[in-house]
Image (cartoon, rainbow, N blue to C red; front, side, top):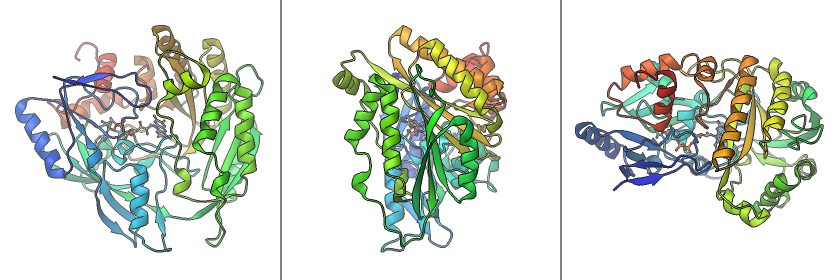
Length: 467
Ligand SMILES: Cc1cc2nc3c(=O)[nH]c(=O)nc-3n(C[C@H](O)[C@H](O)[C@H](O)COP(=O)(O)OP(=O)(O)OC[C@H]3O[C@@H](n4cnc5c(N)ncnc54)[C@H](O)[C@@H]3O)c2cc1C
């Protein structure tokens, strides 16, 4: 008897797997892979289950839930390296870095993690080559020293930039298709105190503001834009929040001044009922906390609302399942203003609500096989309200495709970690190395031991006659 699994955020990927296994050691993972090979079974692997295009599930597979692989294996206080199980979530990783440095002298901390949720695993972040909101950082691959992987042949190997570099470049950003990452060595950065700086600016001033803040030494930042499509400020005005290092003796801000879970729920509710009011309230909160001081690692933690449909039913009386589908586009900075203009038109025409969204900066990735940051990029994120009716899903699909075209026309691309709605032409324009990636998959895993609904979907879009 199989078991139906689904992703936690969109809940649009129910997939029946044949069994779920939860290994707690690398030897158990190796035995599962060896057993599946002998039995002619296939494997899918998940961490926190936040991808939204079936990347972590495969129908009929033995499903490996990697979350018990979370042991700290080594910590190098001189170089700031921590080797830790790939199933560790970010709160556990942050805690492990604190525990490894007892007393007040916690010199090292994580450099970046995803925003919007915390219960994502290191393995999931590596496999999507995720990013945070550093102003001068590349994607997560820059923070990964090496990986330990159970390969499709059932052996445990190391991969890094110098040892099996091709496997390293495929596994980071490879969506679990080249083996199970059992542990990784994470490069930490100096853990420091940061002061929040906030200004409300228009998008055409934002690039100048980013450069100024980088010159001032700010390390993190993002631009949260206005979401009311009926207003001139739509996707134009935004709260630009940055974080600059301050001396270690600077007192931390009052934690009570930060948004509580209830405050976030109120803001989320307003984003559905009074979008202009939601932006005003968000902006006011950030302006009120200007000058507050945070630790660089814990500052990156987020509040997550797991049961969005239930929340909407209670707060605004909305019935029927729905969720927020994320779509993320990466555009060259020079193409940002034109992209935002087209995005305004796409969202207005489709009448899909964008519940919140940010713009961030990312530096290029020259390491992974399937890079999404091929130069300096502005990352523009949309959280699209998606009722789970055929019409609701179709509306969001059309809007997502319109946003992707707008990014592609400006020389940009899109993130593969979310839905599977990109057309053949969009996949090939946005990710021209995808055919080579699929060929590498055939070389490294000719029997498709590791499979996912995402891979099946990409193949049937790109190789309809052979898949
Ligand atoms: C609310 C929300 C906010 C987000 N914010 C950001 C953001 O700010 N920046 C960003 O870059 N992304 C963001 N994402 C996307 C997120 O980074 C990816 O979806 C990430 O892969 C999720 O990690 P996970 O642990 O949930 O992995 P899962 O969803 O479980 O798996 C994701 C992929 O990793 C593979 N995988 C998982 N564990 C392993 C392993 N041990 N070995 C091999 N493969 C493995 C799976 O097979 C799958 O292909 C966000 C997603 C959501 C839902």
